[in-house]
Amino acid sequence: MQNLDEENDEYVAEMVQAGDKDAFGVLISRYEPKMTRYANKFLYNYQDREDAVQDVFIKAYQNIQSFRTSERFSPWIYRIAHNTFINVVRKQSRERVSFFDTDKLFAANIPDENETQLREQSLDREVLEQCLAELDLKYREVLVLFYFEEKDYEEIAEILRIPKATVGVRLARGRDRMKRIYNETTV
Image (cartoon, rainbow, N blue to C red; front, side, top):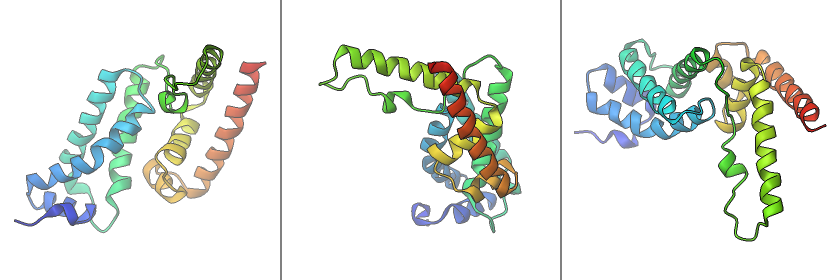
């Protein structure tokens, strides 16, 4: 039996296409943490996130034959995840969308923090989430992929199926709108 842990994603996907069901487990172990982190940026409800990540892998497995092994696997599965998460957001149109892991950005259990600083951090988190929730989805998704999933313009374009130039435009407009919303919120 071949050790697939050392093979690239595209080869492992090719093995899945050839009927090696265990190979899909390798892809799951590689991408589950990434998909979970990505879901955390879109979905507040823990159960929704968990279900959506499972749906990503179910859809990936069901559609693995459509994956072209001459292309990169990462954008392919991120595109599936993106579409899955966006569908969950649209179904729950009033649910707030979070793009920052605010627990990491504003760690509350820092030993030398005083209570005033903690209150200010709490306010900052609320303002930040409010600003993000007010951004159009097309700007939020590009900001998440660029800043939190660390995808480059080409990968984002591939995932969202938009021109690379559009990625740059949406990033710039998203940042500008975020600043404007922040300034309006904090005035």
